[in-house]
Image (cartoon, rainbow, N blue to C red; front, side, top):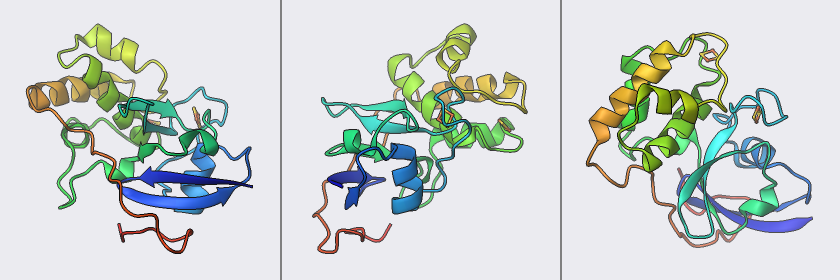
Length: 185
Ligand code: FES
Ligand code: FES
């Protein structure tokens, strides 16, 4: 077992995990973040995408089926469940997906939304071609992508000039009971 401490959606968790545990399984099975889904388990579909801080503290999209839970030790992770504001207001990307009808079954949507959030960090004013290129690691079997692209362009328009739209990982106290969150989400 390896002990890891990860801040997930603003709440710090400390847990013991088998060293080979994938981040997606840790998030779903131990932390209970079942909004993060497994589509393929072979890093092809992007459904499991979350944001994870890099060593510089910048949140970047990663396919959580291709990351070990131990690699998230000391990092902040944002899942689709932590993207909305604390008062429940949708993130501009979630709002745009809703308004542009950018989902059908919704299975790809958590990963698609988080990849798109990361995409706009690098390119706040993307062209349609840049959106399509930026989301090529996320597969959707329902929508034909047209409304997804439209949603990302709409979100870019809505959030231009509004920095800080990725929730900051909070550095709360490590919970006394390692299996319990320090703060009730
Ligand atoms: Fe991770 Fe498909 S489940 S990329
Ligand atoms: Fe069904 Fe994308 S909405 S897979």
